[in-house]
Length: 114
Length: 115
Image 1 (tube, rainbow over the protein chains, first blue to last red):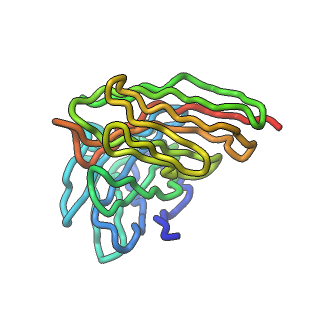
Image 2 (image 1 turned 90 degrees about the vertical axis):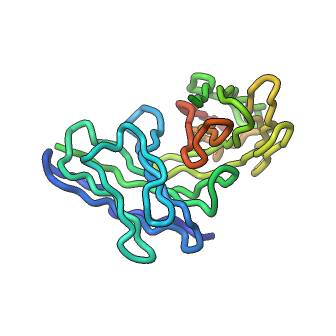
Image 3 (image 1 turned 180 degrees about the horizontal axis):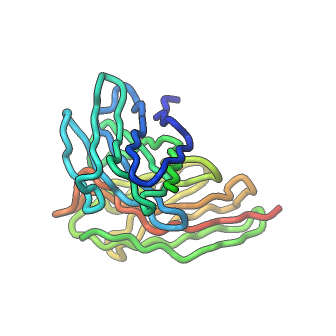
């Protein structure tokens, strides 16, 4: 069964450092997403991406965050200057279409900011 | 805006017991409704979905029916197994004025099934 692949599985970074989280969505999917889950809390939407541009973003997704699809297969989330409160599990997802389609999620990257 | 309310956990059952996890939503129009499952140490997996009123989604013995009149999408399974122990998330997308892209999740319900 096709998978969404995320790397690394766990990243530890110092406050103020830049991090890039990487994702390889399913190859025939057109819509890409990032979500995060702070320990013990809700899964929160960050951003959706379609046709090489952001289609929607949440209030969490401020100027410190950016996304990119640098080639035909990767989809990245960059956090420019990490804060302690960015510590969370970050999930990448992809889907064939919007409303009626479920997502396929990756296994997540656990980001720990120290 | 759209929101999802799930029953508070944790839920602890014995093997072969009947499971219900309640989910109600707030949205206008006809959003698509989903249940996701997260096994320990893993990502979210789509369990089932329903995209219009009275649709029943089903998978792996789990079922949920889209009830527009009660704005509900309760998850049920007739006989749970130890391997069903996980966190279950109800979610929705779309509806009138809702986002076509963004999934709105409930808080999740931890299910533990004992042998």
